[in-house]
Length: 456
Image (cartoon, rainbow, N blue to C red; front, side):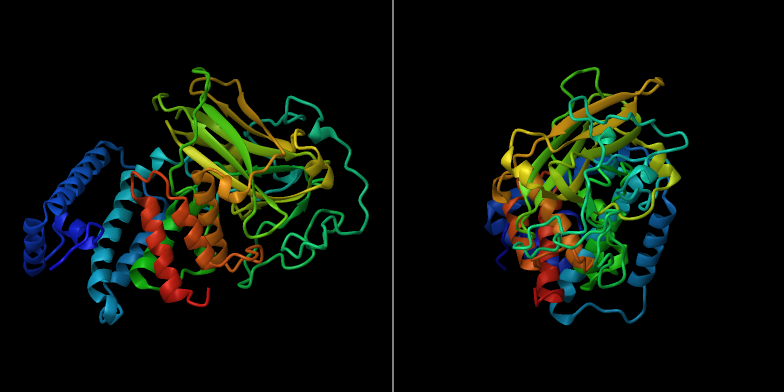
């Protein structure tokens, strides 16, 4: 039996998941190839390290939605007469064992807390919809200042420019962002996807220059998507797909605060949008310091404010749903945790003509443990965007994940991207993958494209 290093049987053997006959075949291959034996030892070493890390983690209480999903998944796995498609029966059985165990460990062991900003008592829907003053934190939240950015112009106090009932977009660009907008900043056209799901629409920056996004993001939606596609060979219900949870399941190499006294750092980057020519994507990334000990920051809230002279319209990708009390109160950030938010923008002609002019600012307000005073991390959003293929690997990978989420949700904003495009971009942006999560995502993509999305 000839086995390659990327064969899942090696992992199953290292973890003791094979029966006697399968183990004997793998052992024969190991005796014939010393490099395979070394690979098995490496897998066992990583597994032991992860097991030790999980044992040292405090076990958080399961959220209601997590408990429901685990019970539902257990019932499905125990359903009598349920079999996987014959050609993949052995492989899917192995995947089911490994992924079910991994999902339970992640949910019960709190490993995701190393990478996510989490809020107390938060749910996956504890995220505010992007919007104006009605969506700003109230009732115990951080009081937002009138001016978000420390430089001119003061976007929050600027008088909106007079708007006529005309399209702000260049009609020569037939993209999804070229929808007519009302004077109130709402989109005219499909505000909902093909399955009736509400999504954040494009908004006129002249009417609504400020956006907020939730900083208490769960990851259970991604785990649910991965299980259904990779184990059960079926697509998830579009309503169960939350793009921000999918994007933030993966770790990213963002720099932490420069000043040792700061708990959080925020950065903003622009790249051209791969699914809508003429549009740009804004990535807002938040990173907590790595050496802060335990709740590094608390009551963390985030906002982005756009300059209407530079941004014609914007939409927040994911974070769909109403603002909740938990989201308004802010989130707690653990050591080295991070959060990613993506925006799709349509810039004005003046922004394209003036690359040195900031198009807005991103801001995170928070409190340190034991302090009542509010601290802020602020960064400018420059208007210079790079070609998508020239963006860093973390940026491109996050966008690929978001694009896949839009495909699964049948989003009206998905533009020209197909599943094949997502696979291509994800493979090109794997970068460093110490936990193997990105490699597993690509396997999920391939499975979805081959078995479930063949037309794309």
